[in-house]
Structure formats: C-alpha cells, structure tokens
Image (cartoon, rainbow, N blue to C red; front, side, top):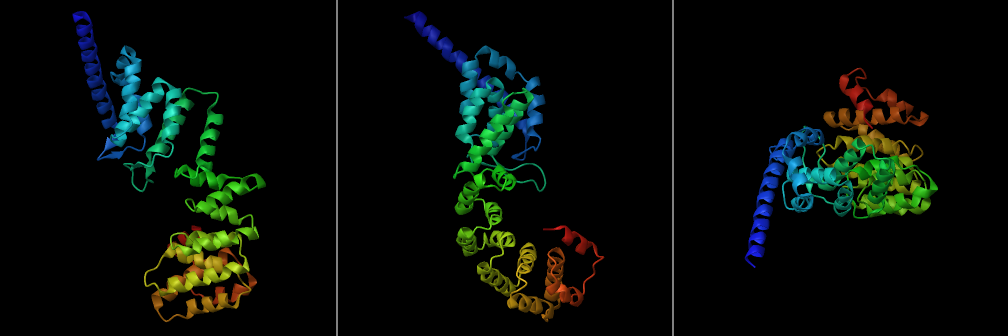
Length: 332
C-alpha cells in the first residue's frame, strides 16, 4: 500500500515538475513573438528559429502524451502569443492533432493585432490556418494542395465563417453556373458583401432584390453601388440617386464613396437626372465642394467614357498634371 502511495506521489511530483518546466519554456518562447501585446508579423519564422534553440524538444521526448495534453490546455484562455506558440508546437508534434484542433477553431474570432503599421487585424482561427499550412509546406506534404482546397471549401460554405481569407476566396471564384448558388448564398448572408459585386456580374433579374437590400444599411450601400456598376439595371437607378442626395446633405466628405457614386451614375447615360446631378456638381457655389466633387466627376467620366458626357470634360477645369490627380486616377 505504501509503495503504491509513494509511486503516486512520485508520479504527481513528476507531472507537476514537468508542467512547470513546460509552462516556463512556452512562456519564454511566446515572449519572442510578442511586443507590447501585439504579435510580430513574421512570428512563424521567429518560432522556427527559437524553438530549435529551446529546451522544449527534450521535454517532448520525456513524455509526449503529457506534453500534448498540456499544449492543448494552453490553447484556451491564454494570451495570443501563448496560444499561437502552443498550436505551433502541437503541429510539430503531430500534424493530425493540429488538423483536428484547427477544425474546432476555424471560426475562432479571437482578435489578433500585429506589431506592424497599417497591417490588417487577424483572428486566431486564421492564424492557426497559416501555421498549419506552413508546417505542411515545410514537410513537403503530398496532400498540401488537396488540404488547402478542403479548408477553402469549409470557409466558403460555412455561414458562420468570418475568416479574413473569405473575401479573397470570393473574389477568386470563377463566375460559372456551378458557383452561382454559392455566391448568391453568401451575398444573401451579407457577412461578406464582396460577394454581391461578384453576384451582380451574372446579371440575373432574380437578384435585383438582393442588390436593393444592400441599400437598407449605410454600411453596405457602397457595395450596392459597386454591384450596380456590374449590373446597371434601370430599376436600381433610384437607389443611386438617393445615395447621392443623402451624401450631398452631409457636410463631411466620404471621398471613396463619392468616387463610387459618380462612377455608378456614368452607367446611366440615358437618365435625365444623371445630367441634373452632374450640373448640380459643377455649378455649386461652395468652392471647395465644387473643386473636390467636380474632380471626382471628371475622373469617373474618364474611366467610364461616353460621348454623352464629353461636354463635361470640357466644362470641368482641373489640374490634370498634379500629383493628387495622378494618384486619384489610380484608385478604383
């Protein structure tokens, strides 16, 4: 009985000591990829170099099961640096376990901010994807392409997916009959309004109500305007003019939105109101408004030319050789 008791104590002591050492190593490694609570942008490369120099490999050899279970426990309720480090180590230990954990966390929305100016904010689910794909790539996995397609399909088809990858996947979807229903489904969900722009390219009359629904919310109406550029159906025109009039009343200028408004109007050269709004723009008394919006109108006409708008090219006087004009011409 005493021997069993001592064995249990010895086992508990070993597990406690092992856990403390592993905690210490993970903490030490994770600090290398974090600055001011932000993640280093090249954190995977840093982990590649730091892990090889740490004592973590020896701990893995001592008890791989306890090592794995500890790493899994570390994934939740910890800092982003510890979670990423633990997942990286888990993938290194067993890529199959990494795949299982990824499926459980593919929609993990825990925000991640990078220590890099003007870089997008990511989330834990997306970064787990990056870590796992990089591990598969380095191991020269024969199934890498197949696995990437599998993950991409999960992201595209899952209504709950808020992955940052989803927008680019939508943009790259081929516009064919096979993808139509998927694009329509995503556009209806409204979580990724880029899908509406893609949907409009099909120019299906049954989708007009979906495009109109995007004008019910100020946050999505810009996507509605962009969609109309791909599908300038007359029934949508009233929504464009409503946005113009609403923005005209605002004393603050949403410059990207004004560029889109004017360009969208150029797709309706047969509507009298298009010319009324253009005239309103170039004849307004406020000098700043006149110069600013007239420049946006001029650029829209140049980018989507029509003989009916030629007179405005002559009427609008702007410095076409200025750096600002050249830069604005590059914008969508």
